[in-house]
Image (tube, rainbow, N blue to C red; front, side, top):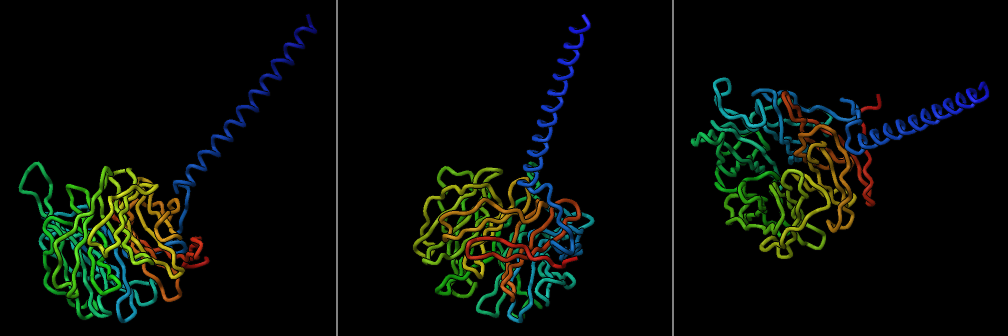
Length: 378
């Protein structure tokens, strides 16, 4: 009897130990998977302000919500970042803010290390938003944006007023009267210059979700009727951007609807006709295209629900790498500019109450390897 009890005790003890070991292994695997998922989606990334990224604007003056930045280098060498200056994501006129959201700007004279005080670029009695900035002929600035006004239909909160432009001939000190260009189309990326000097503006229709382009042959004074880009069966919200490939074809990246894949289209005739849009291998919003000094193409995006990301193409947009994490903050609408040392500055925004503008700096090799440049080693 004693011997049997001893055997049973030893067996129970052995089973308990095996269960404990098995449970420990399972828990270790579980936490390893959780950490891996967190790493992939960027939730465990602990970026430090002042080291990994800079906050370049905290309060533009309307309500401390800054968003949708776009950056360029102006002819005197400074960097100009334009942005949406509001009190929330859609800042319609109200009693506290009778003119609603506006377009503001900030300058940097030291390659993005420090930034001046925000100043007003354009402020109507509507919600003026999503500005982009570009330099024409090395001297003229064009800022394109769109506006919203309170809807007369009580079933809607706002109604769109389409795409507008303003110009500056003195590097941003003063700006022209605003001009409505396309009442039924909207914009989310800067005007680009084609090899023959023609200007191309990327547009999109709010209802159809398709991309479109328009051209100017007189430095932005007049614009052609928009040419729509076929989207086939894709579900897109568009927000397109366009770049010129080395073979002179045009590549257009388009925002996917919600978490649907992004779309792309190609043009072999300078944008007059476009291929039916096809899906990219990942979802994304608000694409911004930039050619790095190393020759590779970069695409900044907001990865739905995950944050600000970037994809790299080393084969002229034929393929794109899986998006790389820039910052877990989920505002995005990234924009890029090449700095004098051939590094690249990317600006984006945080989203949420009191959203700020941020900036990171990186380099990318001809093989597509991205290396982040710290603002300080401390």
